[in-house]
View 1 (cartoon, rainbow, N blue to C red):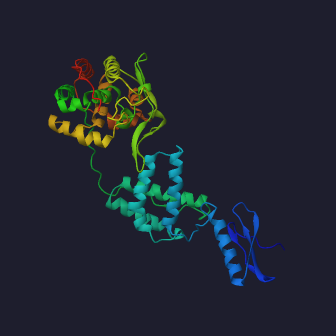
View 2: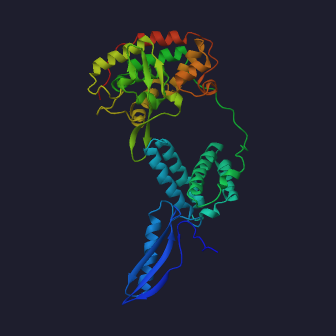
Length: 398
């Protein structure tokens, strides 16, 4: 009968024997690759030799990622190890830094307060279910799903590391909305008259002009890009001859990294967008007036030639202008919805509009971005004539 096989990542009994004036302690250690290693240490006393072997085993275990963790480890220790690996994957481009920030926030504020003193094996399906149902009742289904995603990731990592056999989240009860659903407000887009008035006030506002808002707003109206996509547009993305701009990613604010450029939400996020003639002319004029010291730099730049910070732009310039103009409800997403509605009125299909906006599914375009109830079909004409009638304000260089 063969000897009993040690579990992976564990050591056998430490045996000690006298050797001259000292003592030799040794044991067998089975690594996570299945190989056995003989660990031995010599010391002056019996206990010192035994302690030296224990320390050697401990150090060897630490060299194996995740090996020092077990099913009896505290949940926060396992979650921290998962998040560290997840963050490294984000640095390698596997995940977005936005996902890291969201998971980190929900882990800190919603998961760890509940499981902070639980061992990993104690975070069972009923325990998880109680937390998720509490979040569903006290907050929203969306938050409950986000919390569930964090726990799922931690537990999947734990299974892959051999800490537990199955993922307890798999059997959690469905997250069903138990409160009466409120009817969503219809998507709000600018009417043709509102758009004409909004742009006129924009061009006449000295502070808005100094902050480069007229060109920026027209960029949103011409492309329908997400705010991070347009702010992350570089001059090489603009093709004057083809009259198009290629979406190459979007800006995000990552904790500890500042403003970084992300690859995009979906495969549809990287796409060429055909530009109207007035927008092509605006970008050509902008490039000439700015001088473009960095031909590969951003189209909409800050005073140092880098990417604009969205929060700074909003707080210092965009929101104050909207308040002065009486359009505080208008956001960059409103401009995106306005373009979708204009294209819808012009007869484009939901699929065509979805391609322009970068949506993977036309249903998203129809449900969220197409404003309804506007009888006028002159939106596109109003947009074109207003943009062509721009007074030619010089873009800011600061």
